[in-house]
Length: 462
Image (cartoon, rainbow, N blue to C red; front, side):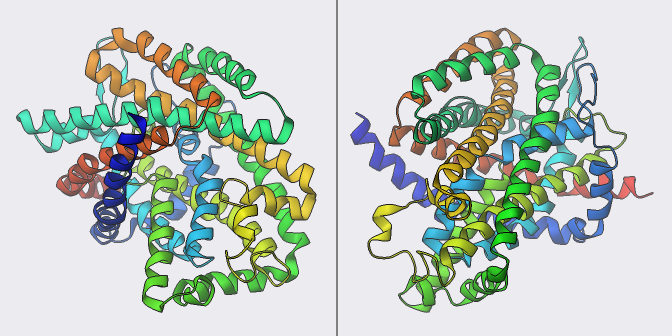
């Protein structure tokens, strides 16, 4: 059954990611960049002040809501996952160092997209009789399209995200944790699975406030540690930094020099790899992070829209870029094992799963490099599991009412444990497929509600 379904799901994913979603998400980013007069440039400083002017690792309790920073931390926890390490590695291996340039381009336009998502999540959120806040794409989809069509699109999105993130996605994240810990520390993956279930279960059962309390602490710490050791690695390799940036810009427009083949084919690979990996790393346009931003306690929706943009900036321009610079400066420079490209015997030694470990290991030693990336991946993937579970839970409640929460949590914990036991290609492909499918109704609603976003933005500036 699995062998029969796998090629079908892979074909669906190929068409969705390479054609429909690639152009759809870029179109949304360009559309909102012009529609908002490049809000990602005009209001970037405002977003930075909102985030770092109110930075706190103990934002306290806000009842059924979160502080603006807690909401951002929860969103970043979802954005900064294995994609920042393994995704970036795959983009570089397949598309060459120039793929990173296209990741930057996509992230720049994605900042406008996520501004719109967060703003709409705030504008269309609802408050129930018990004071609970409900917000996210299902609510702004139904605002954009009333009647049966809106209900269908919202339900389609809710089912897709519950499966993509709540179940299969968390399974994929736990698999990354289990495999890297087993490789680095020789800890059996089933033990890692039990520990994950205990930690996650404790946080899940604590509700939004416990989740917010954890993410507002773990996100700055994990990003800070990665930043420190990444910068140390770059300082050690400082004489190669000019060549590293040179390769990123050169191979963005002449990728055939390292990928081989014709210039047209090479550019297509570099652009598509950078764009796809970038889009699914920062999650702009996917409809996941609006669930967190809807819970933020702010004076005006525009404020959280500006804060959301900083999430994309941190994810791509800081964390993902730092990882990419370490990889290129250690492995692609003159003394690196990939100096001549990803060809020959080297393809049997390294892949996207161990590329970052190889890069950090070349600077700090193999043992430390493996351990550092394993620990980093644990924090990245663990925090992603926490946020994705929340996003899935919100949509499960939309579909089946609050009574479904306990059942949803039990099923999610089972998937998390199973993910550490074995890697199943079908599970990874199913996660990607539902991930791809949830983008479509979200993007349609974003186009339809551009007037509401602009109206909110203008009212904030009066």
